[in-house]
Length: 367
Image (cartoon, rainbow, N blue to C red; front, side):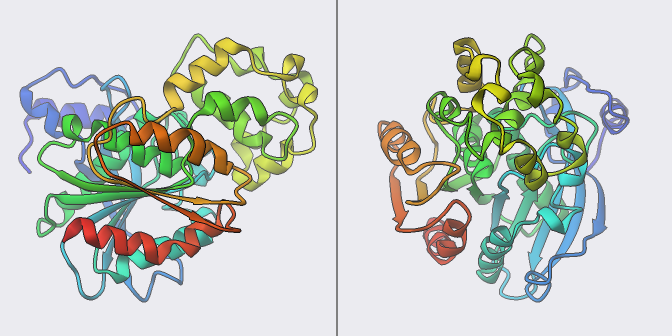
């Protein structure tokens, strides 16, 4: 790829952690997806027999269109390569750099390994972003869908920049935070993905309708998710400070956000009462509104068919959030929506139990 001196300067500044708006030559729009570094990755043992991997640093954009960096994995099947790409959007891992799945197998969750292996066994290249802020200098905008979506789409561009044999067709597959990312990516695809062609979006237990979900979290074992969500909001909204809503006891535990990953964060907050978590025991309505603005998918039409998978016994994203709220929201648009509910499945087991179903559905999108 030939790059003008101006564009090279933009990339160099981005590498140094200096955000730069792409206001130079028209070709600056081609920077998202540019691979800045590529090294051989050590893969989890479940994936080593079926794929080779590269850990990449690549260019993407934030929600304001400013050029930033992201990291991730590009996984290439060892056999039966079909030259199609599936973007894998991972579930919650944490907020800190050590929580990037591309460098830490401890947060390349077992259910994600099963899902990704099923994709590779079909012969598809898998582009797996870490999302901005996990492995890069900026804060991670956790659950800010527009941020996740851009890094997901640009990971597909990066895969094609590494392997010119890959076609323009792609599908997105995601779980939880990644399921939300997949839906947001489907919303922006035609205006953002350039010459790529999105064929479908598979979403497993996606985060959605946080205006209904967030208020019922205080006082439950999943309170760490809410704290992370507040810090994700703060990463994109300078007018919001989590300390204005977190109670005194909750503030004493925020070190876990930088020293630990998901399991440590959940353990740190799980035993607090609602009043120990939040001032007054509840989120102010204004904060709920802000969360909904940045975090709720289905605010605009998806641009390719959608598959939704939901476990009936999901404690993190309850079944009613997906079935009763998200499903009719998506069905109101023109794209086909397929809903699969797994009886007895939990938030994580739904990924494992549906791996074959999801891969078969994706194969239908590529046919």
